[in-house]
Length: 113
Image 1 (cartoon, rainbow, N blue to C red):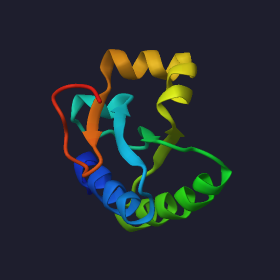
Image 2 (image 1 turned 60 degrees about the vertical axis):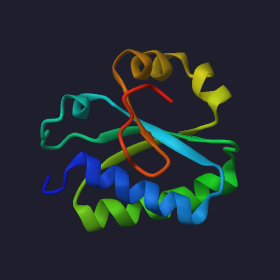
Image 3 (image 1 turned 45 degrees about the horizontal axis):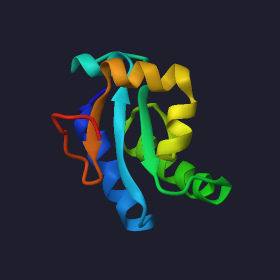
Image 4 (image 1 turned 90 degrees about the vertical axis):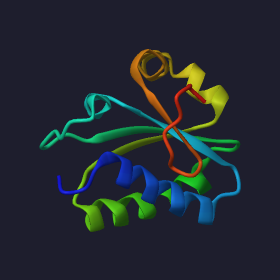
């Protein structure tokens, strides 16, 4: 992978902010939390919105596909509201244990969002 995970997240955040008024930020979780490059692994992200529905997902996937192509990465993005995020216990627990929060502007925060 030629681009850093931080660059990928910044680009996603920038695009989401242009399209969605309710984008709150996202968590990075999975193998990339160690800050190292991992060939043939997906960048796993949980994106938070006030509203998450079919219409939003239909707008999200073209953005993700374009960034994957432009930056030569594979992204596994899970869109959630805060409520639906907590209900997905398996991912929520993993993210709360090891995840890194990026605010809506794509900047890492020291505390979880």
